[in-house]
Every structure is written in structure tokens, then in C-alpha cells.
Image (cartoon, rainbow, N blue to C red; front, side, top):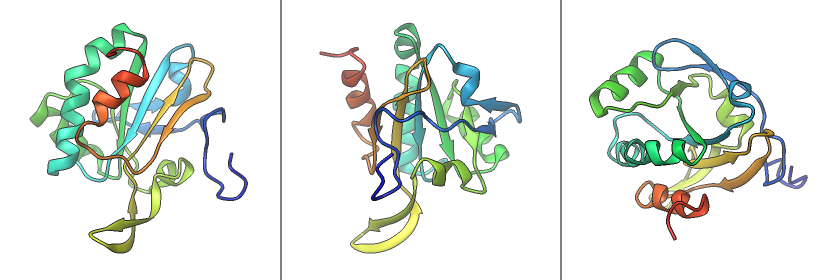
Length: 160
């Protein structure tokens, strides 16, 4: 952990959490011990940027899983809205509901950010890759929705 900012950094143990997925099932990060996990935080289900990012993950989920990576999406949306999003766009991986923003804050994915030139408080589009031992191997903050999954694929060695 970066002592000056209290932010998670590569090499830290990823904080465990339990949230409900789009079907109302509890999902914990510790459920995936022994597997690598890509956790992406997105601002809001069914918005244009978040839809693009989620669909890019959908289109890559099979190859990511074949390479040993599980995908988890997290937003502040309700379980019902996550289900609607998953059904509308054919998203086959867990979409987790963090309505209280507890896990967002734990991972530094909620806070002050610039939006259209103004400083606002909100969800910071972020992605974390956790190895099978629960250690953060990649921390990406304030990412763009478009092109993000291609960047992740390169980082995990799927695309040269």
C-alpha cells in the first residue's frame, strides 16, 4: 500500500470482499484462490462507455478464461439492474452489486476525479488483476472504456 495516498499498489494483497452477483448469489474474491482474477470497476450499467467496456470483456471472456483468468465486473448498481444489463448484453461473467460503495472505496475506485474539466466525486473506472495467491499484479486507475480490454489482453500475454 502506498503510505502517502493509502492506495493499493502492485504487490499488495487484494482485499477480500463478498458482494451479490446479478442473480443474487454471494461471490467472494477468496472463492477464486488459485485462479487469477480481473476485477473491473465501472460507473454505471447500461451507459454507453460501460456497455462498450463490458461487451469487450464479454467478447474476450472465453480466451481470458482459457488463459486462466476469471472476470468480475463491479458497479454501484442494484442486483436487479446488473441482471438487466447482463441479460440485455449477453454478459456471462459475474456483475457484482456494491450499492454502498464499500468495495469501491476499499480498492480506491471511488473518489475525486475530473469529469468534463470539473473535479467531482464518483466512480473511478479502474481494473485490478489478482494472481492465484491473492496478490495484486496489475493496478490500472482512471482507464478509458474503449481499448481497455485490448490493453488487458496484452498485459496478460494474449495479444502480442
